[in-house]
View (cartoon, rainbow, N blue to C red):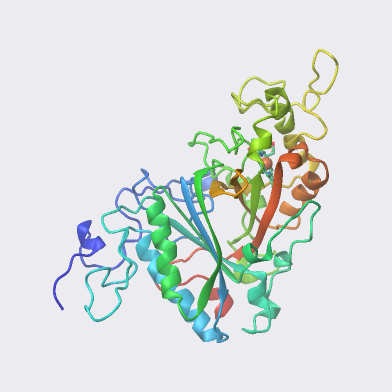
Length: 417
Ligand SMILES: C=CC1=C(C)c2cc3[nH]c(cc4nc(cc5[nH]c(cc1n2)c(C)c5CCC(=O)O)C(CCC(=O)O)=C4C)c(C)c3C=C
Ligand SMILES: [Fe+2]
């Protein structure tokens, strides 16, 4: 075989195996001596792939998303487990800025299809994370997994206002690809789909630009397409004790194979942006209960001021109304439930009626979606004044297993072995 250039060689990393923590990646320690998730040092650096938890959950939210849901088309459990092993190996490489396979886009036999599609040649790792989840439908009778379905993965109930489209909801498996470069995220998903040919087929996918949450205090809070800062009161990677309580599945939670994992809820929420853009500023601020400039709670001054739900205006009326989004979504209203949100803005063109097909691809991780997401969404669904301007069109619930420990491990090993 002739000597060809590979993405790995372009980066001068040599022919040795996958670099676990790429050059420039830093690992930080959290409070209480517990190792906190490692972070990429810059937007082009790699995020470590191996660890106790999957990367892409508390990892500081990258700017771009390609999310995909797959249906499994094989009915052989061994083939499914094999696919997860192949995906893990490819993910370990791609997240470190390497090509999906050892030969790469141009280093293999001319007669064979390349084991990398090539569009990321010359691009750095760009903070790529790949996070895998298993949908409830994977636990039907095809693979003998029914008895291993966690109670927390019970289907989400129908909620008032849902206008869900089945063809862009659910799925057996999902992969969330986040990166600072959209081409790197798309390349990763495309290669996983290519590797899965004959065993999985894409059910639906979603591109996102512009994160709508911060998952670290080191990040500035971004804005959603309604123009408001979004992610201020999010769970953050520095909240180590809260993460243990609210995010990570514990050993006593009922499904041992999920220990160290987390449950992912996705909702594609269309915004009626043309209607929103005609709403007065004061009304927009009342809807969220925060001001549009600073993101401060109404009655406060700065973004991170504690919300005072009793604050009154000069007329003696509550500044944060009973139907304000932050009042209804607040943990004090929902039995203490919190979420780690890491959603993205999306625009899927326009809808043929001159309206933007735009909104929020909401992503939230949690320890128990029924106690957390469902509780919050039930509060919002009936009363939130934001509902006049949004429509939930797609929904997904996935069990994201713990992290891959080392090169001998793979996504979901504890479930399949
Ligand atoms: C079921 C969970 C939630 C859905 C669905 C949801 C939709 C949604 N949210 C915004 C914009 C904002 N949300 C904000 C705060 C906030 N939202 C949720 C949950 C859901 N939001 C929570 C738990 C919180 C935090 C509440 C708190 O503890 O104070 C904010 C304020 C800034 C912030 O804290 O992030 C904004 C803005 C949109 C546009 C939307 C659907 C399209
Ligand atoms: Fe919200």
